[in-house]
Image (cartoon, rainbow, N blue to C red; front, side, top):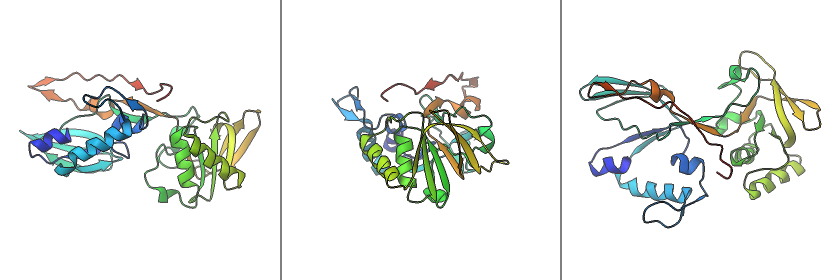
Length: 264
């Protein structure tokens, strides 16, 4: 969309809920081979993203990452007011909705009462690493996201515990080796099991309960819990915008696509 607008000499602001450019290619399969791009026999998701970024570079688009558009209002003919979840407002004459199946929403772990701690002590994404400096962290998950943030946040954290339901990880082998080396050096903890309960009130999380595969329950002091259980694609606020064309409401599919395919 940015490229086509650029050909028309239209400058674009691009808003994306992810913290990086690339959508599904960057989030779901950055290293997975792709064979169905016209004229390109073989490329990875990361490679395709890099090529697209190079293609739109001359058009100087402005990117607003880790943001979600929450409302779209008609203000004139033409004229729209676009508002994001961070309070940012755009006044524009043209809006292109290039959301595909929708925005990526984190999968919530099955922990009673977790909703009360979200955005305060429970975080499904890391937007500013510095916010976690000097804190006691518990990261939950066994994929690349959990391992990458374990390695990146461990130097900043007061303490860090990685929790996974089994002693077998889906992430890159090099990341697994680095994580195990930190555990062996006593620089972080690894617990095989799952978080079963949270302590605290008013969104403040002083501790959580972790049940090991041996049935033992451990109380771990924590300032922030970071679950990385994968993502679900949902249309999100787009379904409520009431988008019209020629005075007719456009029906919007509010179905979800579960990104839970092995190997992706």
